[in-house]
Image (tube, rainbow, N blue to C red; front, side, top):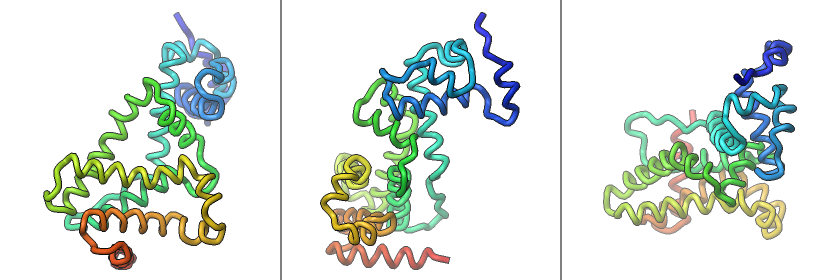
Length: 235
């Protein structure tokens, strides 16, 4: 029978449960070093548990990796939860809120948290964890985005067309996460700080989507409408 090192846990009464500590330590190790380079020994040392704990809670290193990726996503989603909308909220407002939320979760606008780095590794180099991440977390949010777009166009576009627009929105946000250093090389510093921060970016991506859907005429008009919705939503 495998026994978790309860004596270590007893030394840290204020700490999280062993399983939680292992997931957090594993996520940070995998984010920094990748799956192959990260070791179970180092993870257990960082978590303050013995080696048997990983087998007890997860079975093996692969399952630990999958669960740590899912755990990272849960933590990041908890830090930046989706907005809640009241009945009658305009779809334009929902789209702007969704885009802003997506950008904030992806970027953090500061030192990227390890959760984001770990999920980026998984997106760029997918493993079995990616499929579970998509089915459990990504697909529901993608479905929500498509439903917002469908509400905007009142059923005038097919699901295929809506999904293409949704993927284009995600792609515009993702480039700042995947190629942030390149963006910083292309854009003057003063412009980067004033026009590529969270709110201006969310306005731009939302306005671009509205213009693409034919909901706001030219892109300039789309931006004006987004500013209007932001002002109306301000307390």
